Length: 112
Length: 113
Image (cartoon, each protein chain N blue to C red):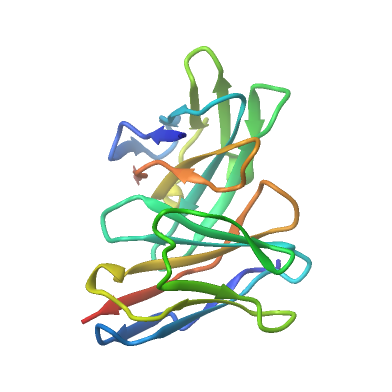
């Protein structure tokens, strides 16, 4: 069964550093998403992406965040200058058509 | 803005007994409703969804959920729990017009032998 994959599974970085989280969505899916879950809190929507552009974003997704689909398979989330409060589990998701979304296993980001 | 409430942090059931994990929602208009399950060190796995039609929807692993519009609820159920069902369960809602999912806080299901 096709799955969404994410790399790395864990990332530790220093505050102020840039990080790129990578995702490979399910191959025939057209809609891509990033969510995050701070430890002990709810899963929160960050951004959705369709047809090579952002279709929706939350208040969390400020200028420090960006997304890109650099080729036909990868979908990336970049945080330009990480802050302590960016420490969270980041989930990528994809969907063939709206609305059922399929999630990857997540990348645990720790900012020191 | 939409919201989801899962009033129980944890539900404990004995193996073989029926289980219910509760979810209530608030959204403008008619919602799309979802249940996801998370096992340790795994992502969120899609269980089932309600879009329209029959209020009782069936999903993976023998789970089902009942949509109740008057009570704005979408409780997850299973007639006979398995130890392997022990996991974290998330209810989510999406508005028809948008595509973001809003999640509840999650309910940990513990099924004891």
